[in-house]
Image 1 (cartoon, one colour):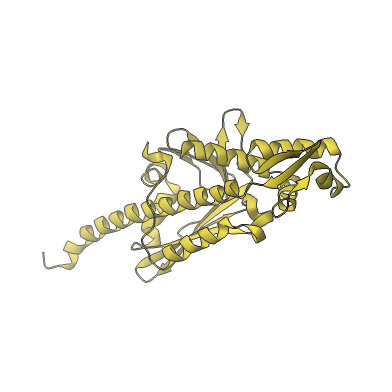
Image 2 (image 1 turned 90 degrees about the vertical axis):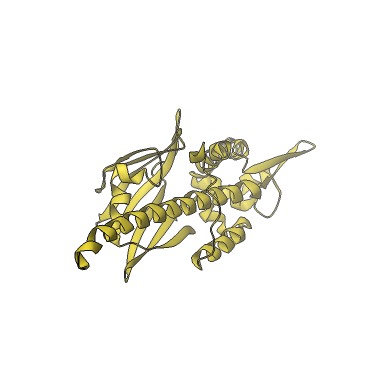
Length: 145
Length: 120
C-alpha cells in the first residue's frame, strides 16, 4: 500500500510536543480552529479546519510521548465521507535535544494505482526537498481565510 | 483551496469503494469502452459497473467520450495528482506550524529554567 510520509525536525523535546498533539487548546495553535480530542483507543478525533472543513476520526493507538494513531477523513453535509477509511500515525523520535516527527497517512485512495501515478513523482520531489531541510512551500490551506 | 477540498472529498468518496479503484486502474493507461470494462468483472452486473463509472465521472476521476454508440472511459490523472498535492500541503504546512509552536514553547521553558542555572 502506498502511503504519504512527512517528516520534520523540531527543536523541542517529545514532552513539549506531545500536548500539541493531544490537548485541544494546544492543537488549535497549529491545526484547526476547533478541536475535540479524546486521545485513547476508541476516543474521538475531530478538528475543524478552515472554519468549515470538519476532519473526523477515532484514535486507534496512543503511546504518550511516542505516537498517536487515528483514523482520518472529512465530513460533509449529508455526506459522511469516510472518516474511518484512512489512518494517520504521528510518531515522535527523540534525537538529543530535538525530536524528529514523522507523519504517515495510510490507506490513501491511489494505493491501488500508485504504480502508475505520475503525480507521485511531483510528491516525491517535494518530500526529498523537505526531508533534506529545504524550504517548504507556503501554507495554502483554507485556514488562511 | 476550499473548492479543491470539496473535489478531493468527492474523489476520496468515489475511491472508498475497492471496485471503483480497480476500474480506475484499468483505465489508467488505456481508454476502454464500458462494455470492455464490464467484461473484466465477471462477478459484477453491467448496470453496477455503469453506476461505478458514473460515480467516478462525477468525481472527475475519469473522463467519458462518446464514439458512436459506445462510451469510452479514461482516468483523469490530474484529479488524482491534485488529491496527493492537497494532502501533501495539508500535512506539510501542519507540521511546519507544529514545529513553530513547539519550538516557541520549548524556548519559553528554557528561559524559565535558565535563571536557576545562572548565579542569579
